[in-house]
Length: 115
Length: 109
Image (cartoon, rainbow over all chains, first blue to last red; front, side):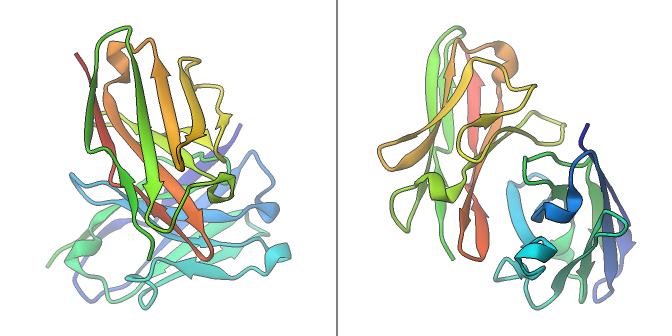
């Protein structure tokens, strides 16, 4: 059974940084291109970025408006996906979900950016 | 960045059929866009109904089907049930990015 468990969310002041984690199980993580998506309160879904499998280069892409502050990484030895967010803005307030290639989502991790 | 468009809202009668579509400003949607369809009910996390254009999950009701139709990705609901009332989002893949549509609010009434 595919399981994705996000963690690391919380309340952060504007300008701060945060690292979200997503622990994956139930599928071959090392072969998977993994995604992060987010949803601001009352808004639609927004694609944040994806990271390729190591065999496909291991590189990441982020949505254009986010790429200067968001970084995806992975640790295949721990079956874990990460999202580093720097220079947080109030508009980054959202629930962040990791997504597997077959579309499984975790329960989400809430990030609130507020002074 | 590509723009993905969906109908903002649709209404279907119980037992009726409705088709939600997903288009791209870059041209026709093809299997190479690996369309995903997500369903989100009020107060719940989204869940995927369809991935890679036409793959269903075990939890995807049989009344949902997907296709490519007239240059768009399509999600067809046949025999709508009250519990199908939800927001539906498509996600398309492009070189180096993916883009969500704005979502379709489906009302079963």
